[in-house]
Length: 458
Image 1 (cartoon, rainbow, N blue to C red):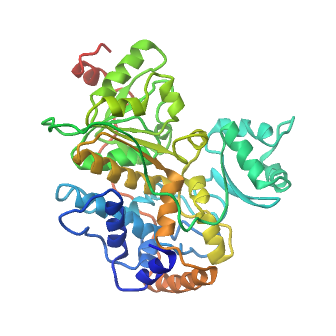
Image 2: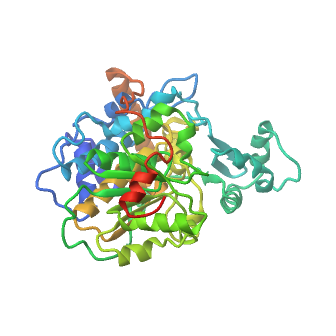
């Protein structure tokens, strides 16, 4: 759909979420027996009701509209998945509301150029703007090397030091050091697809007579949300963590971790020794679907090569989630949900529409990618598997933005005005979260049972 065609479409009475669902299914080569059933609401009303509008804008100012239908795209992704799933698997679930659940649980608020979670911030460089996400404590230790300083620096000095440096140099050097940094640039009206098909293998010849097994090696939000959605479809999910570096979300708000991980079998495997690597390889060999968010180089060092495994294991679906995609150099770039959305052009779009420098939503690329990854994984599984599917946070957001990107800046501003009025007329809601189905298992609680079931020593 071209920018003009998409805009014409959204000004009609058609169902935006359903149209996006159909687009996703077509891109997967699927033609479901019935049209996707999705909420038929104007995208402005969906954004406002989801809580995302409340999370976007200056801390002391009014909530802001996003002038492309990201929340409706989330509803569409869930509708596409539901059209391939058993009846009732997602009853009562809203794709749009999934995007704001973390903020609801953690009581996060809009903060203008700073992410609601506080780790990501927009900075003005000498020739443009960048996003820097200091999500880990060790990231701050990299700042002197990034800015080529001999001495330590205080956070207050960071804006002035960035302001005299060129944005592309900051991004390039930061990525080499392992910082999550991105240029705040205009979105691409014709981005790459929302997933990339890597290695292909043989499909499975028959059903295994059991629920599909998902081995989830991922952490934080996108991957765990993906496996959570597959779990709702009846999959057995085995969450694999390192005992020395468990999922970082365990150290966050327990209700959010429970929401995504309750009911999963929690296995702790130490890949630093051969016994642990052997256990990990055996667990992967038993899987129908593997979800991972690691750099390919790291897994290959453990003797785990996704491309080889997909080619050699009939029926295996491998879902690789990354910040910017597989292949050199982007597979080595670190990214999180907020900076990946900036890389996709979302903050630049908000600036064009509002004249303000804003982070949009809360780590919005994470849940958007989790929804799309679940769709890709399930579509592959029900069609026999044998695929490596690569999804990048920045590319998923870019795909959603381009689905209905107005053809000019003036058209964007006019849409912003119209959609703001519509949202204010219908009301702006707060983020809301579901109640977790239970408590997630402690780290390694199910290791013995799972490995014994595979005939392995613990």
